[in-house]
Length: 184
Image (tube, rainbow, N blue to C red):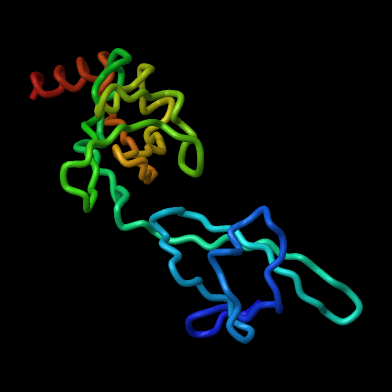
């Protein structure tokens, strides 16, 4: 299968009934969206096509996707820095979403996927990201979380955030620095 300007060069026929073949058509040898197919009705359309190569037949599944303009397209975190050695539950920042649909409400959740290595160390309450543990730069200076925003229409978007931990002087270091300042 190779890409041409607006379509894909594909084998000759669409096959099977466990897919969305009725949403597509083959024009000559190009795979194109069929008439009346509205991507907002279904985000991922599936088709199955068959073709012949010398001495063998094959079936190939294809997923056609699109980016719906009516889903959140970015998540903002008001702050991504916290001081170390605070009790669990400290607020990291407030979440908000960018969405072309004015008036949409959004729910937030920590989700699996790339960038979710430290999700279990944080929690979200309403639209506030909080720690679930006491963080320390000695343990880890930067934490990675993956957050999804889902609007009231079911559209979702996920984004990775890095939470930086401010290294504060430990009590003995703080006393030594204060003594140095006072001694001068």
